[in-house]
Length: 257
Ligand code: CAA
Image (cartoon, rainbow, N blue to C red; front, side, top):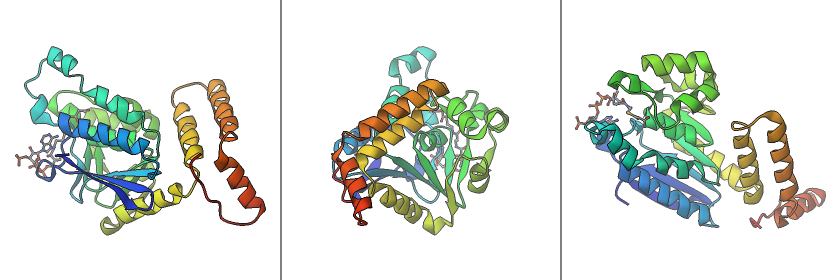
């Protein structure tokens, strides 16, 4: 891997992926995104991993797609390269994904954070979709995910002006789970990941799938989907263990089966 650093056992059952193009503020070039896609596929298959954190550095989570790589491209070049197919795969990651964001999370950087399931931000985080300032618009889900996360009025403002919002504001609008001092953001993300990794990974996958479905369908179909996943959880040993442990007043030992 050239542009990311992967630590599969950063904490017990928690993997860490660090975006690593610091001089370019972690601008997301094609290779970085392919490395990220391939790593997430591997980690999804790794039974020792139950939650995954994606982070950058204090200065930047990611300042967007690599503008220099796109600047001279034609529409047909963009169509052929099909850069967002890697994003489609990333979106399919089954394990819980947490973005630990400090500094810039702009354009594709904001979109990548929103592709994750939860966001922990530092007090210095800046979120935005500034593509309008370079003559384009969000292309990796920004218009859809930002609108669903913070509502039409605010999303429209950010997308049409390219303004940035702080971590605090982002939390106020419901984009971010928690804002902490800069020296704590990774620690806080790890604590969250560790808490999730103590749950049944089968139940976590089914639950993640059901929550995500709520963005893609109407209520009746969403409730139907939820019910099927709820029943499916009863096919796991983890369900037997979880309920037995409750009755026996002890901590469950989940095996992910
Ligand atoms: N792509 C390529 N290079 C980038 C980059 C990007 N998105 N963002 C920053 N860089 C590079 C800069 O070119 C600079 O490189 P050089 O030293 O070689 O000149 C280096 O990173 C440091 O950046 P700055 O000197 O600009 O740092 P700054 O602190 O003055 O400003 C910033 C920081 C406000 C984030 C500014 O860099 C900026 O506006 N970046 C672009 C943000 C942006 O427009 N993102 C959207 C990209 S398009 C997109 O993401 C489409 C999509 O939906 C997928």
